[in-house]
Image (tube, rainbow, N blue to C red):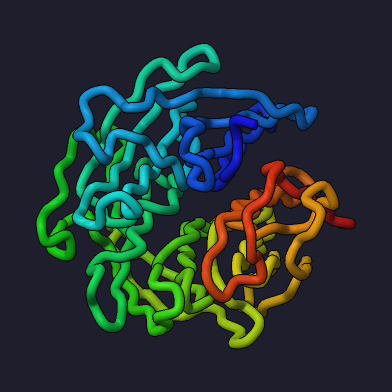
Length: 318
């Protein structure tokens, strides 16, 4: 009863999963993080103080979205305030974890429009900004990069001029005006970013100095890959991508081909295990764990919110 809108997921070293829960569907319930144990028991991990101390009224409720675990065990969290205030009020936090519990929250950066997906690689945290220029046509979005030791950064206004931006994207679909969303690295250090509204996957490569060398479309399947929401890869660099509008999980192979792992129609019974507006797909061993956000958007298969909140599990044969 205290979890109604699950979103991002992070796999920990002990094979447990941290789930970010903004509780957008029913904000009488505070935002929190859940932990799914290796034995699949759900438990509270951290409940965010609401209102959060020191934050301005109206944006003092943390809205946890993308989440990733650093090598230190700390958690990096995207705090998306876009639904409350569209003028650069979203944030990036580091949750300092000691002895398996959140000890404190440290502000890494403020001034995003839509802080969304997070990946950690090579001493940096990468975060997708889904609406770099909110009123632009076509919509521009971006990836920003921060050192893991950066704190209390105030991003520039206008945001498009901030030096933390490493690459940008253009989105053409105005049905869902969110651009860069899902984010993941492969074993070679290439970065993959999915455009939510367009259903297009980009591949970003880097030179020896860590500067972006190329940003090109890697995969698309018009009419089949509708959204590119949260995603993770397996050991063979297959990307498992939540296709939210379609109630589906797509596999994008290392050669850029797109396959369907699972797809279903609008859910009638949440306890059936079917996908209900999936927002992220996480690889854990031979399982794909799917977070069902169930936060209805126009033109999605999912037409209504219903409890209980669920994660789905798709078991891989090989």
